[in-house]
Amino acid sequence: MSTARGRLSPVRRQRLPERPSDRTPDRAANGTVDRTADTSGDRMADAAPDLVPDLATERISWSVGPVDPYADALRSGRGPLFLRRTDGWLLPLEVERWCARPDAADLSALRQCEGAVLDIGCGPGRLVAELAARGHRVLGIDVSEAAVAHTVRLGGQALRRSVFETLPGEGRWDTALLIDGNIGIGGDPGALIARVGALLGPGGLLLAEAAPVDVDERVQVRVDDGRGAAGTLFPWARVGTPALLRHAHRLGWRPVRQWVVDGRPFVALRPGADRPTASRTSSHSADSTKRPAVISSHRDRNPLPESVVAAS
Image (cartoon, rainbow, N blue to C red):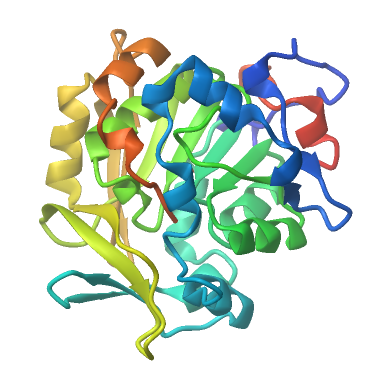
């Protein structure tokens, strides 16, 4: 990948000033994050409660008691797995595709990535691993422990963290990904886009995948394996390209490219000069971010603390 497409030169010895927001959880011997040693969520709650979803609820949104259909699907690499609306309507989830290597549609989005990339709702980590192989500094975040563990096994860097929690490198990421329907995280696309605006650096890029139909809905869903195992209800959103552009336009974002590959529509967006700051994001999303979220350039910057990038 050429420098023009945003490959960063190695800067792993460059240590950023350690702020509470940049301190990462301890990592267990198997590479997964040890949440028991991570108090950053508590610090975040004290500092800015409006930006913190109900993390206790969020952690179990994709499971019910000892049954976790999402984790089971990731371990097996196959479905069936669905999002079930309260009216019984089922949205099939493409577990096999998520657990495979990136396909042509995925690669069309990854080729647009610039510099350091944050994959929001990284799932089993296929995009994180591919971007790392292409020379990008990349971090995946997901609230699913199974997803983070799978990403680490692929050789990627990942944190078990909500997009609405404190993240490394806030305000310094070059590209953010919302692929595989993750524009629906938290059930409020506007609040999510505003949060992404606070995570990106000046001139940053958001690559989002829209639903392949003209839809703009906010619903309550649960993960269901079609065999009786289901998680708790959580808010989700589905937006097609027109709705996604409307939500972004209201926040001052501008589209720079739209394309479709294999029936999957994508939009590349950049924030305007008056994009929301972290404080404005807090005000904008005070209600929506208390709800559970699920399963995100060539400037020489390193938004990842050394402890996260050491293995890259």
